[in-house]
Length: 447
Ligand code: ACO
Image (tube, rainbow, N blue to C red; front, side, top):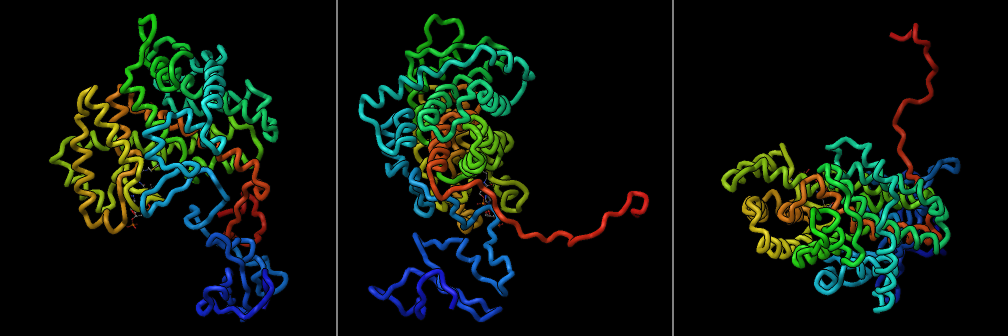
């Protein structure tokens, strides 16, 4: 038996209690050889498969896992999800408790540092973020270069990449102090860039940050201030936005977190790495879904037309946007909290007319065999669009509202990657099924 461990006779079915060995034995039926492979945290290392060979010159066995359905690419201590029972925790704290008792900036601190801050640590952190809310005046020129109807996500992605040209010290990714500074800058500047892109689309002058306001309050100020001498955010909307920011702050190894890790593994600066993550978030299957949900509800048009639309979903013609999740096979815990917040906003701003259509979609889907069998439940994006619309945001801003708070999660994932001695540049393998060698054929000889 070839072994990654000291070899003994393996029979997993018969071992238990003190005899239990945390290994798995794989027999290669091509050669009859057995390999005993260690199991840690219910996982085997893909590299342990490499010893499985038909002959010594073989490359060795790999695992094939398109879309990473069953591959852990890192060890993380940031966010925990149990998708079967609908649990989400940041650094061990349940999302429900954070949404009720914390603020976005405190949660961002928690994600980045691993612990909740003391009062003075929080004051310091807020102070640092606030100091970094302003952006260079050249940014106005950059914004002016965009077409009047440019999608704000496209502008945000470009602006983040452009920031790397302003802060060249950010290249020093192995310097803890430098990393911290870029984190303050990125979290501080996200609302400013987002608000500038919104004002650009309206042709309105940019509003500079008011650092006496809270993080979400200042964002509302930069978005909506018109002729007031001093903008006073509505406390219900300010609170709703803060809770939404907490709920969106991180979500373990999703498409954009995987992107920030993949791109960050080349040691590029965090502005470029988070620009790439923002691009990943923009897609309609990820953070762009909230925008798509609203378009879908408008297309459905009335409660009476919901059954007809659900029929089209079941026939595979369209998707029920805002439903389904790679990890959650139960109600997304964030969707529950968002539904509650939605009513607080509707009480203030009036009920969103699309709400009844959304509720009917949810009611039918939750009782329908198609959705039950596939474990499709509302995800975070199903109700957020309705709240954002009631708060006065245009649809194109919805993914931006997701990206602003997700910055803290991306940065926590990025730093964890850099500090992990096991990580290297991300470089998956492939199974090559293309042509074998063939000789070049001159253009005049091709048929
Ligand atoms: N509507 C209808 N059917 C669906 C939906 C949906 N929203 N989502 C999944 N399904 C079906 C699939 O067609 C598939 O059916 P099949 O087994 O008959 O082929 C089955 O459910 C499994 O779906 P997959 O696509 O394999 O699931 P996967 O984990 O790859 O995709 C995803 C997850 C992308 C979120 C998917 O559910 C989806 O497209 N949802 C709509 C978009 C959306 O709301 N995205 C936001 C996700 S949350 C976030 O990123 C913040």
